[in-house]
Amino acid sequence: MSQVFIFSACWRTGSTLIQRFLNTSDDLLIWGEPNYLLPFHNAFTKSVAHFKAVEWQHTSLEELGFQKAWIPVLNPKSQQLLEGYRAFFNTTYGGQLAQYGKRRWGFKEVRQNAYQHAEMMKTLFPDCKIIFHYRNPYEVYESLLSTDFHQSFNDPYQPIRFWANNMKDFIDTAKIERLGAIVIAHEDFVDEVKSMSEMEKVASFAGVKLTTTMVETLHHKVGGTSSQVGLEANVVNKIDQVISGTLGQELSEKVMSLFAKPKLA
Image 1 (cartoon, rainbow, N blue to C red):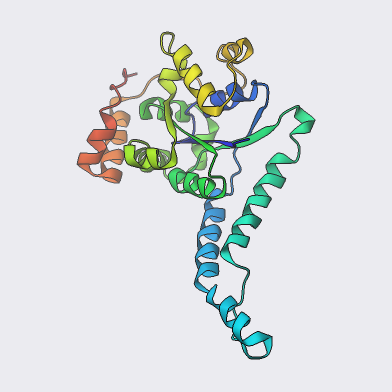
Image 2 (cartoon, rainbow, N blue to C red; image 1 turned 90 degrees about the horizontal axis):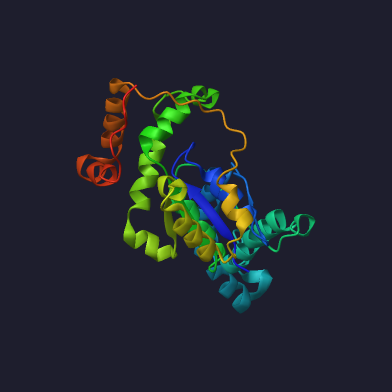
């Protein structure tokens, strides 16, 4: 029973819609954003590296015994550490499945370093399904501007930098194939012509049967604080500059070739 993880390039991309879409399936529960993967990934990386580096002490212990072996940094073997991390996620996210009539779990996350976090989850759960998700950066920023959430950033264009750094990984075919992941564009998922095929793609990848309820989910907007009115030309230019400054000209041009310029306010 494989887990499903959704990693979005930035906030206001429509990731909750995909979460809700999958949650209306018969057996899958996609939890909301953990909000701890950044520090957790740092601890995960450092601890696994450390445990591997001192595994030799087990050999010393087996040869010399506790009386003579060098054991000041003796730790469990790294595989045992991975089992511990795996148990943490299974207990935390799998413990309430029966309460909601589900058999499988996953979560969505919207933070920087999305690919690195996906790698971590793939290490812990090799059979898991990874969905990377993005939206046109101009629409992302327009949506952000119309929310109080946007005011929580010290730099008003920080979300665009996050978006750019994640997108450079999302368009890297080799990286995506390495994780056996798929990449979904919000615009395609909600497009009148493409949405059905995109829903079928996501459902099939996640291993769930596409139902009428799931399809109808796309037509039920729940919550949200956006009231979009368009972007000024100087804002569009600033977005372009931030993306170019973050990725460099060549890579930014490759990323931005996916998107049309927005209509101006």
